[in-house]
Amino acid sequence: MSVLKFILRRLLNLIPVLFIISILLFGLSKAMPGDPVMLMMPQQGFHSEEQKKQVYEAIEKKYGFDKSLPEQYWNWLQRTVQGDFGESIVHRRPVKDLLGPRLKNTLVLNLGVTVISFILSIFLGIKSAVKEGSFFDKFWQVFSIMGISLPTLFFGLMLIYLFSLTLGWLPPGGMPRNDTLAEWVACLILPSLTLLLGSLASTYRYIRNSMLDVLGQDFVRTARAKGLSEHKVIYSHAFRNALIPVVTVFTWSLTGLLGGSAITESIFAYDGIGKFLISSVIARDYNVVMALNMLYAILSVLGNLLMDIGYSLVDPRVRLE
Image (cartoon, rainbow, N blue to C red; front, top):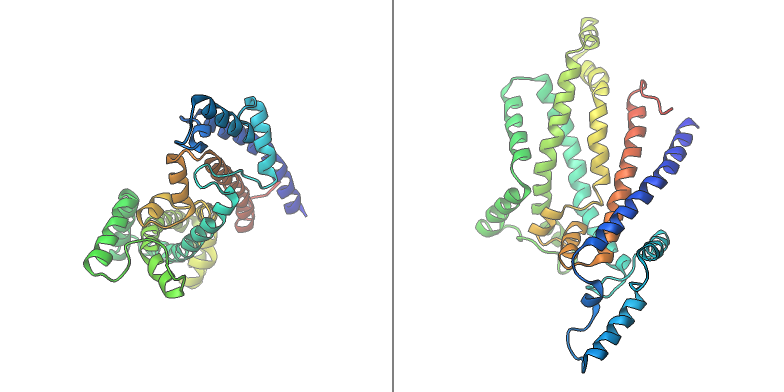
């Protein structure tokens, strides 16, 4: 019951936070250069400046741009709460209709990468910590440093050059044309590998460093002195006490499932939410940018809530109260 009370209390506390974030996002969108009304107007076909002015005023009134900024914000907030994110300036379609398929594509790409990265990181991080200083440990440390240091763009382009241009095994990018499982797998391999290299490198270091810190503590030496098997010492005692940073990494990975991978999606022309955000910013598609930024804000604050709950589950010393 205390967990439920904690969640309800935190959710109530998140309301003013999201309210302040929405004001900031609305203000930033209004500070973006360009005139959204001019973007929606036809570029030619006017017989006079007066006709052009009338069309401008009609569009301005239709979308509420003729009102004051507080009125515009309040109208936008009401629509957003009801799930109406307005109409895309570029695509002339409701924003929610444009976000749905791209959110699905991003989820398909990131879900497998997150699960594989987390499982591999646990295995590699624990083994590296146990075998500190060995060739295995040194190899994966070098790999992790390279994975963190080198940009995603480098990995993506190298994979395209090797597997697409040189070997011709996989397509260099794009989406499946026939929507079959084989085409989906072929299109997902290279962007998934690109994401996996970066994700595995950072998560591995978190787990290895956390395990090294725990393995040097007195309770681990005591467990070994009692004659417990090494497997039980490592997984039942040490790893459980090293889970706090692991929960942090895993929680942010979960919230990032719908956040998109803008650089990777752009490199491989993958029609996900991250690539859509970049193209919308370039095209100054205000309603799309606002909707996606609010989505990221909600995911971030919910991620913090999930972390607090996760801490209490893996470590009895952490109390939600």
